Image (cartoon, rainbow over the protein chains, first blue to last red):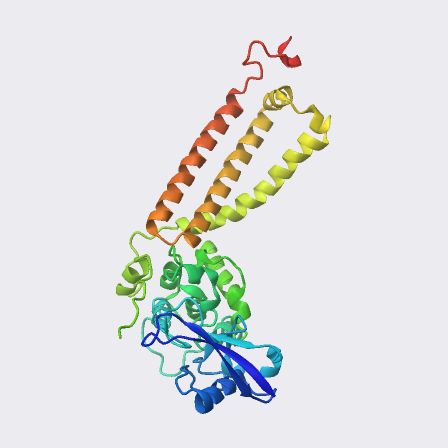
Length: 234
Length: 154
């Protein structure tokens, strides 16, 4: 069937303004939005620029705003989008657009780096693995699923208006270690998120939870960090 | 062709903390934590205070028709209602002020705009809280000697 795909194009080397362009593509209902983008790039307009890598929902490269919602192009089927109507595709919001659907992810990764997303320990390293009970592992299981696609952070209205806010993803990244029984950097991470641009800027709008292609309960994770800060107990 | 200027993210707090690897946290306070907590607790208290206030003023006794200077004076002769109204005034004002401060932080993009909006907000709140507190403790329905209220004719 023929599907109309409307893409927000931007090429600063040609025009300063971004503009909508509509393409007509022949697709199967079971094709994905990524297949539509491929068809457009390969068969109609080679200048269309977007990121994708694994194309199977794991690498987190192709988060974009599809029909007004942040999703992974490689996980969104055409039949789930009402293909009778135009399908709109835009870059994710709140990060500087470089070209077409490609945004500068550096501010996003900066926020992630600043919460120290790595295991912090002291003392001698054990000769074998660091042992953890199943219950302790389950405590942070949800936030280990993050693939850093930025769908949550760029769906957050606070992040749109204030790029200094750490954003949902950085808090998810911190949550993964704060609630890990093997980690000893909890206090530091909590202090970082106690910042005026930290967890207290969250307005609990649940946009992040809705946007997450991995189904992480992002808002819940943020609330758990808030609770840990208030009661000083993990 | 040049690439367009991309506006720098506005405050420098995170840039500073990033350079210190997130470890240079001097000057960090718990202000945002307490303000967040205050909003939740004062909100709960206000539900009780405001609904109680409405119930006592509008449902009990003569209802809305009985409300006049005399009614207010009678209520404020009782320390319970003085404390009740004082709490309601302070909590509502602080709750509202903090809410508007939050909204200003969320939506005002320029530092200048934010500063002046907050200055206006804080000034207005201080004036209202001080004036309101003063009225609760010094209220006199018969301040005007020619008052025709029944409480004043005794």
